[in-house]
Length: 269
Ligand SMILES: [Ca+2]
Ligand SMILES: [Ca+2]
Ligand SMILES: [Ca+2]
Image: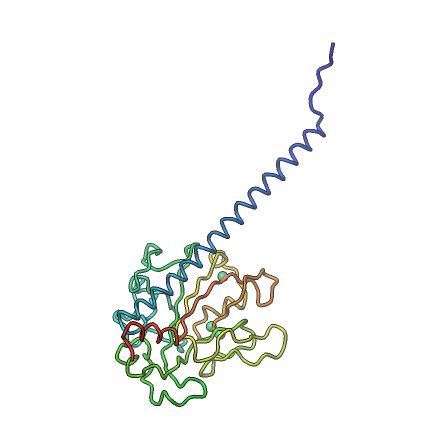
């Protein structure tokens, strides 16, 4: 007679531990894959936003104004001109991508363009034209709606730079209180370096990413929504990284690229 023998408690515990480990690993992989997919989808939406903004400019001879929290995804004011709360103006509390004006399809129930986590895409456009650095060719630019009014953009012409927006590698040591806004001079660890030069960027689109829904995010991210002309772009970082947690994604349009598209389409000069 063979003696029947079951699993010992120790054996069962080992098996359960292995199953738990495998399951945990699987769940982690799944959530990491979802995050990665959302990140890439958001990147695609930003690129689409960029193309649609440039297409809008070709048809309308200007860039659209940002949407505000009450404009249901349309530019404000409708038809462009002097934007509601234009930069550099601290009253510009509600700059969103004008989804209905440019025909952007991923929108929330109120018509605002969103990233793949459902956060509304931010958008800022330069209002003032200026001499490109070291040049005197943009003699008397028409401001402050230089890039959002068709006749002004045309009369300013391609000799003007865009004054109000600059992209930096950190918020530390930047200066938004000067015109043009500045990434400052690099001095100590954590200080910003320029990602773009001043007078280069005419529009920027920002996705605030996964952490925005949970209300987290660091100082570098806060710089992207504090309604001044300085924006921060770098690779994603964890909470204890330089400048705090950062998962924002940005894309921007240089003024030269805008002019290039308008010239190619016969809108300028
Ligand atoms: Ca973020
Ligand atoms: Ca700031
Ligand atoms: Ca800022």
